[in-house]
Image 1: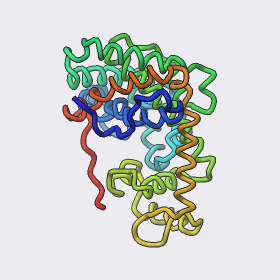
Image 2 (image 1 turned 180 degrees about the horizontal axis):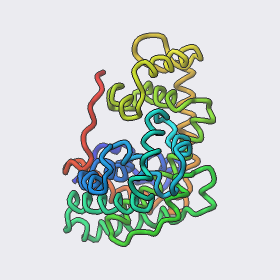
Image 3 (image 1 turned 120 degrees about the horizontal axis):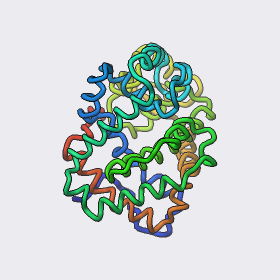
Length: 304
């Protein structure tokens, strides 16, 4: 079961740790499957959480504790605060952070068990992947946490024992470590959360249409256009109806991505090139299986 969507092969000890960090990006989709599994939505509905944005925001930030809405706005940097604040004002009255997390974990566990199947989860290759993902994540500790609030919150949680949840949680820790660093760099380059979304969309890397990006983060078409105009005035977006980066804008985004790779390299440098490559080889078919089973849905495609 080959995973042909990962175009960077991790089969060379000559890859730097930063290049390995970039090559591991496709496997974030294993972590992200937890946002789409019906078992997760069903378990949250059972405790009275039916709004998908509330479920997403509160369950993801729950490892940080019952933080104020303003903290969630700061952490979920590219989401519209007008969407975040009312949902988080309600979230902790529906369930505690601990219940949000345990419900999420139970739903993810059930959904991944269905999607992967008992036989695959019990296989030696799956157990090896779980062990390597756990080892990579456990190379990170409190010394790697400054400036990374979501990662720090997850770092304090107890590790699950089942292999498929160990794999998912290890990849979740690695994803939050990278994501927090990426947000810090975007903000450091003077981009608002909406500007970060627009410039990412303008790279052409986002496979989904603009309307999907806007709706998923709570931005209106009018807010998007006003922010895009500001980016044009700064020389980062080209003139025209379609968002396209100028040379200056593309150079900035490429620099941010390269720096994100560099500050995310620690677990792969510590795990080592050979074992990182082995993990990537094992994760490819597991990721493909989630797509085949529908656990990772196909996003709406943007027109070209």
